[in-house]
Image 1 (cartoon, rainbow, N blue to C red):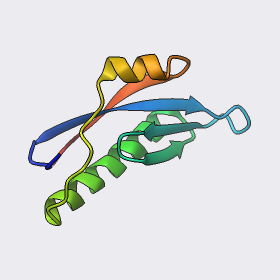
Image 2 (cartoon, helix red, strand yellow):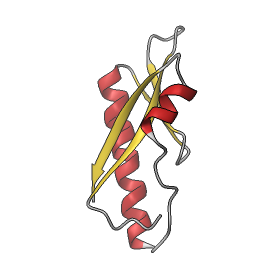
Image 3 (cartoon, rainbow, N blue to C red):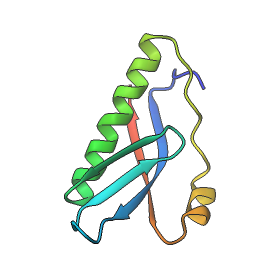
Image 4 (cartoon, rainbow, N blue to C red):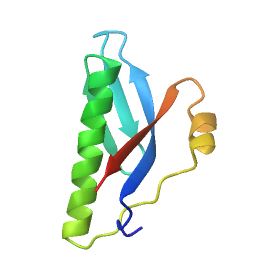
Length: 89
Protein backbone atom coordinates (compact mmCIF):
# COMPACT_ATOMS: atom_id res chain seq x y z
CA UNK A 1 0.00 0.00 0.00
CA UNK A 2 1.26 3.47 -0.83
CA UNK A 3 1.31 5.70 2.22
CA UNK A 4 -0.74 8.66 1.08
CA UNK A 5 -3.40 8.76 3.78
CA UNK A 6 -3.13 11.28 6.57
CA UNK A 7 -4.42 8.96 9.31
CA UNK A 8 -3.12 5.39 9.35
CA UNK A 9 -4.35 2.74 11.81
CA UNK A 10 -2.99 -0.77 12.40
CA UNK A 11 -4.04 -3.47 14.85
CA UNK A 12 -1.31 -4.37 17.34
CA UNK A 13 -1.04 -7.32 19.71
CA UNK A 14 -0.02 -6.67 23.31
CA UNK A 15 1.95 -9.32 25.22
CA UNK A 16 2.80 -9.25 28.93
CA UNK A 17 6.23 -10.52 29.95
CA UNK A 18 5.71 -12.46 33.19
CA UNK A 19 9.41 -12.38 34.01
CA UNK A 20 9.94 -8.62 33.80
CA UNK A 21 6.37 -7.40 34.25
CA UNK A 22 6.81 -5.28 31.12
CA UNK A 23 4.91 -5.37 27.84
CA UNK A 24 5.77 -6.17 24.24
CA UNK A 25 3.60 -4.86 21.42
CA UNK A 26 3.69 -6.06 17.83
CA UNK A 27 2.20 -4.87 14.57
CA UNK A 28 2.58 -8.18 12.78
CA UNK A 29 1.58 -6.71 9.40
CA UNK A 30 4.73 -4.56 9.37
CA UNK A 31 7.15 -6.59 11.49
CA UNK A 32 7.13 -3.89 14.17
CA UNK A 33 7.98 -5.18 17.64
CA UNK A 34 8.77 -2.93 20.57
CA UNK A 35 8.29 -2.89 24.32
CA UNK A 36 7.78 -0.77 27.38
CA UNK A 37 7.59 -1.03 31.14
CA UNK A 38 3.89 -0.10 31.01
CA UNK A 39 1.12 -0.56 28.47
CA UNK A 40 1.19 3.18 27.79
CA UNK A 41 4.95 3.24 27.19
CA UNK A 42 4.77 0.20 24.91
CA UNK A 43 1.92 1.84 22.96
CA UNK A 44 3.79 5.14 22.60
CA UNK A 45 6.95 3.34 21.44
CA UNK A 46 4.93 1.44 18.86
CA UNK A 47 3.19 4.60 17.67
CA UNK A 48 6.57 6.32 17.22
CA UNK A 49 7.92 3.32 15.30
CA UNK A 50 4.83 3.28 13.03
CA UNK A 51 5.12 7.03 12.40
CA UNK A 52 8.78 6.72 11.46
CA UNK A 53 8.10 3.77 9.16
CA UNK A 54 5.30 5.66 7.36
CA UNK A 55 7.38 8.83 7.02
CA UNK A 56 10.22 6.79 5.48
CA UNK A 57 7.79 5.07 3.10
CA UNK A 58 6.58 8.47 1.92
CA UNK A 59 10.05 9.94 1.61
CA UNK A 60 11.47 6.99 -0.35
CA UNK A 61 8.24 6.24 -2.26
CA UNK A 62 7.96 2.71 -0.84
CA UNK A 63 4.92 0.55 -0.29
CA UNK A 64 4.02 -1.06 3.03
CA UNK A 65 1.64 -3.88 3.87
CA UNK A 66 -1.96 -2.74 4.36
CA UNK A 67 -3.45 -3.23 7.82
CA UNK A 68 -5.19 -6.49 8.60
CA UNK A 69 -8.81 -6.53 9.66
CA UNK A 70 -9.10 -5.85 13.40
CA UNK A 71 -11.61 -8.68 13.98
CA UNK A 72 -9.37 -11.17 12.15
CA UNK A 73 -6.41 -10.21 14.36
CA UNK A 74 -8.57 -10.50 17.50
CA UNK A 75 -9.59 -14.01 16.47
CA UNK A 76 -6.04 -15.04 15.59
CA UNK A 77 -4.58 -13.71 18.87
CA UNK A 78 -7.57 -14.42 21.09
CA UNK A 79 -5.46 -14.88 24.24
CA UNK A 80 -3.95 -11.40 23.93
CA UNK A 81 -5.23 -7.86 23.96
CA UNK A 82 -5.43 -6.31 20.49
CA UNK A 83 -5.32 -2.53 20.32
CA UNK A 84 -5.32 -0.03 17.47
CA UNK A 85 -2.21 2.06 16.91
CA UNK A 86 -2.61 5.15 14.78
CA UNK A 87 -0.41 7.81 13.31
CA UNK A 88 -0.85 10.92 11.25
CA UNK A 89 1.65 11.68 8.52
